[in-house]
Length: 214
Figure 1 (tube, one colour):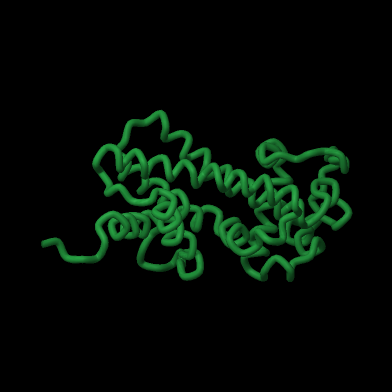
Figure 2 (cartoon, helix red, strand yellow; figure 1 turned 180 degrees about the vertical axis):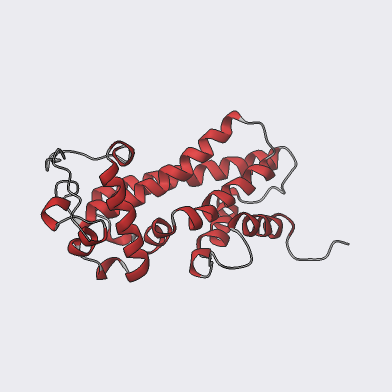
């Protein structure tokens, strides 16, 4: 594949702190992160080199380092973007009036729909968080804790409103994530069900269980 290096590309210095916002402001960085996520999904994080990533996006390896300092930095951007996506969607719902049950459905759909739109991000997030540098791991853990707290708040609200039984909100939250988070292992886009349909099926089981109504 031909090298598509831009003559006017700006080198990012080693002291630059790159945020997830840079993915939208630097198109080539967006390509690099998406290309790397696809490779990590296909081969696994440890089997992909910076040279592989450069080749996948049509850059020479030295040019790749104009945009990212290391594979760890790409890994960090993938994790942070994953969390930003789900947190942003959840935060946007605060301006919309809906039942706690409906909001739980949307939380489940947010996670599952990423298997279609950001499949590589999903696998990387769930399988390679231990490879994050310590500072990045702390940031991502804080994002994850914030997101889990958002779900707990919805469950507590539903219990107060009489929608849910007064169960342990923390344990219930973990149970909900447990249903959704493993789905990337078996979900196939060419399968019979779309992710939104799976989210609804999971939500129905989560809220009503599998016992026949009496």
